[in-house]
Image (spheres, rainbow, N blue to C red):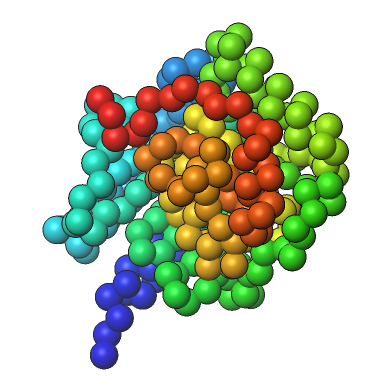
Length: 269
């Protein structure tokens, strides 16, 4: 019997590789860089070109499906999750990294696909079927002692003094537990994949969006990790905040140190 979700995931992998070709070609040329919400929140013509290619391709194959795309939302469309099968698309996760020569591509539904096209690494996760990188099974680290943990996060795109103060204060509190360290590669999706691969023990961030964490989220959980809210409560995809950790105890310990940044939800006008 045909497996429709596997067919969708295989199609997502194919589209991810096509998008990677567009991005690699764009990196050879001068880019027209635009600013969205702040000088640290960037978008390029390639982001928009890739998203249009993805949505048009998926609509042709699955005309009844719905979409939430980063650039579509930036252009005024709403982030609405319904019972209809929905593709959550981030054409280039970490555009600042793209501008400086590094990027990630992401798709999510009942499965997640994160493609690091400059490394040619394909991360995939399918609900109930496990998580993989280029066919190799992923497993989170067994680390439960926060003092032996390595965390990943980002500084975010907001440059308001109060937000920056909270972000740096949270890092200070975590470092002084103490922990082994805090790292970041410029993209939530790839940071989360590092947790899934056991390279890092936990990821946390506030101010990101559903398209930043949806695809990688299922990769984390299928690798044996957990997703939770920054407060330590249940994960909410539209909340714009997340802790992804190798286990619940580690995530809850991290949550105790984090001061909340007030944010408008993705599904709010």
